Amino acid sequence: MRLRFTNAQLVCPVAGEWRGELFVADGVLVDYLDEAQVVDCGGRMLAPAIIDLGVFKVDRAACRAGGIVHVALMPDGAPVLDDPGVVQRAALIGKPDLWIHPIAAATRGLLGRELAEMAICRSAGARAVGTGAGWIADSAVMRRVLTYARDLDVAVIAHAEDGNLTAGTVATEGETATRLGLPAAPAVAEALAVARDLLLAEETGARLHLRQVTTAAALDLVRAAKRRGVAVTAGITPAHLHLSDLAMSDFRSFAHLSPPLRGEADRQAALAAVADGTIDVIASGHDPRGPEEKRLPFADSAPGMIGAETLLPLSLMLVRDGLLTLPALFDRLARNPARVLGLDTGTLGAGMPADLMLFDEKAPWRIDGDASVASAGNTPFDGLPVQGRVLRLWKAGHEISATPSPPPTS
View 1 (cartoon, rainbow, N blue to C red):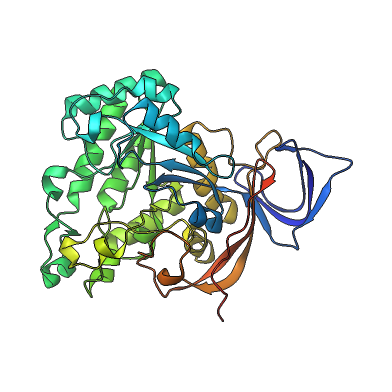
View 2: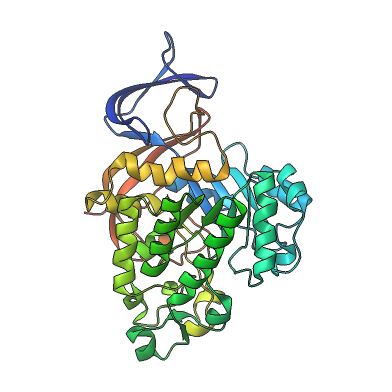
């Protein structure tokens, strides 16, 4: 397939933003072609497709609607991704439209005790190893995980909360949790886990990705570690950027997340960390949960939210608020996730795979969980008016069948 994209507003994390053309030959971006099929972009934005780092379920329809062609699949699930056969199957099921990059379990069964067969899982297709949705409490085990991952040259993707403090809790200590009578943990539980993992990563020389960093204290630790040269990256989801724990005020279980929503001061600190580059990755945290898990009392419900199809419009709010430029946003949506996973994609440079997304950054619509194309509708942003819709999507120059988006609203 030889393609010539014309009349496009190009957005690249490296080269910036400009109006021009883009050429594709044999699934790869090239400098120029004499003859090619023309794709008129109509003046819309053409950018690298999104790489979603850390989803809990493969949800093709939601990914197509959200402009996502690569997902890093969390090891939590049934079965856990601690066996090379399971990892290999997971890596193959989405191709060619959706490339799944399994995050292999760092320990057997994600129990935090015995190391899993990380090298064999790496050979089977794992792009990273991870602790899953929980914390490895034993520091000696975590040190061995980091050392082994360093030797394999893969990143360790860690959930950073001290499980001894968060066990049995569903909220962050503060006025909201007290008023609602919810079991809560102090926000320092995150900073404690981040501090330990940063010190171990520094000592071992391993690459560490903290999947979600959501508190001011933990963000300060990451900022200081980066200045010291520690190989650490940090991520976050739109929920912790746009919502505080006040979103739980009506006991709405769609706002039951892991880590839990934080106070307003921590939310503001997270926004500042996105703007100054302390946070490297913005991901959806896509975790579909049906009514049997969400239509329960808040403390009994399962944590999690969908987010693949709303990742782009919720992230574009950061651009409209002046916190990021469009190229800087796609640094966090595409280039940096690719670097964490060791993927050679995420930019519009010649020689890169033609993983592309055409979108209208101003198209208005309203998030509606019941109308979601995802396999469930559990979103804390239900009813929120947003802007930004994916129009067309390509993986390696092959156009992926479009999934209908929600109808626009005025």
